Image (cartoon, rainbow over all chains, first blue to last red; front, side, top):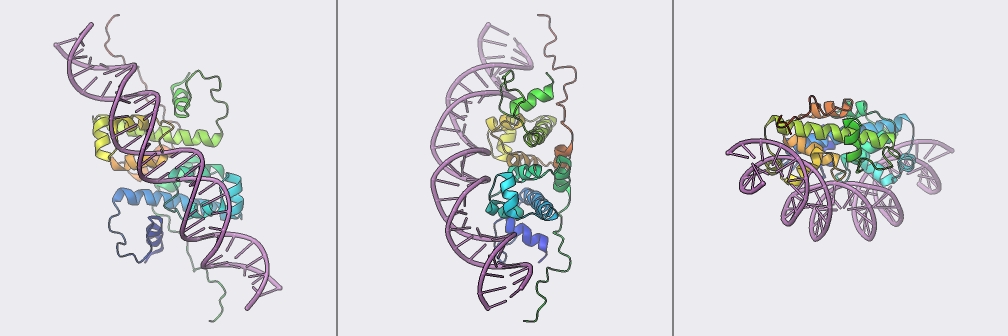
Length: 121
Length: 121
DNA sequence: TGACAATATGTCGAATCTGACATATACTCC
DNA sequence: GGAGTATATGTCAGATTCGACATATTGTCA
């Protein structure tokens, strides 16, 4: 399964492997999820770029680490408003936000997988 | 006072003339309001283009006339989520939405004022 | 391996947003 | 003017989202 699809399912509140998978996701629902994912990815990218921790971002924005974590995966419980407000707080411009929203599913740059220890198991 | 400014104050939940006027509206808050106004205006434009009433739109997207009215002026009680979902329901594309969000304050086309009856009073 | 930091997930009371309704105001035609 | 339609505004109970906290999982380094 492609990563972007997995992301979408997750954001929609499904466990991957659910029998329902994509059924029942209307075009509009899917679009909204795509937008949120785009913003979520942008938020994460921005934070990592700055080499900040979720906790640091949380304080700066006046939120909590757990909520930042949920934002970054576009959890069902996070609104567009919160995502946008957070991005603005981090200095992302409206134009940048618009760019993310309009762009096709920003495939979560996953080149050459994390590759943790590189130790035989 | 310019129309766009009046709109913004209204959306922020202020009565025009309030002594506070713009004070206390941070750059981020203002940006968010601008985005909502842009979407609100787009929603209204779209509806009028189609020559539909607020009531008709409401039924189509499963809401109420009063909420549509509030959406169209970006009332404090309407979320970005609701605005975006509504626009998507009306067939507006993500790209269009992005366009509205990114664009500079879409000054509420007010060319040659309504001019109702054109009757001497 | 163990210890420590970062991130993820679940839950909860408080805050915000929602559709619905009542009602007020504005517009259009006669 | 009045009647009819459209839009605006106020309110409220139910739904959703919020920050916060506890706790689980993952990642990193020695």
